[in-house]
Amino acid sequence: MSITLYALDGCPWCEKVHDALEAAEIDYETEWVAALHSERDGVKRVSGQRAVPVLVDEERGVTMNESANVLEYVDSTLASS
Image (cartoon, rainbow, N blue to C red; front, side, top):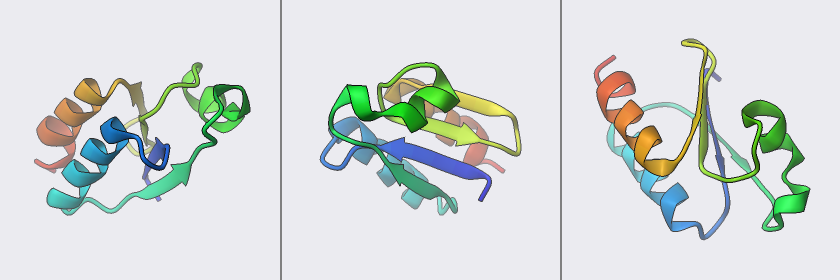
């Protein structure tokens, strides 16, 4: 899958990104991360930090964090594709 969202269950910022991806009818895969930051090695490997949400768009070579940035990217780039 080209789009992967690293998210934490119950995270309100992650839910906003999920909702935006769903509303734009974008196919994506979710990688659920551990609640403890110290156990988030997978997200650290791809983004260099342990916070979520993180969106990885392999097709465009984009990896980004911060929900506001991700939401803007979904709206301006992915939804218009």
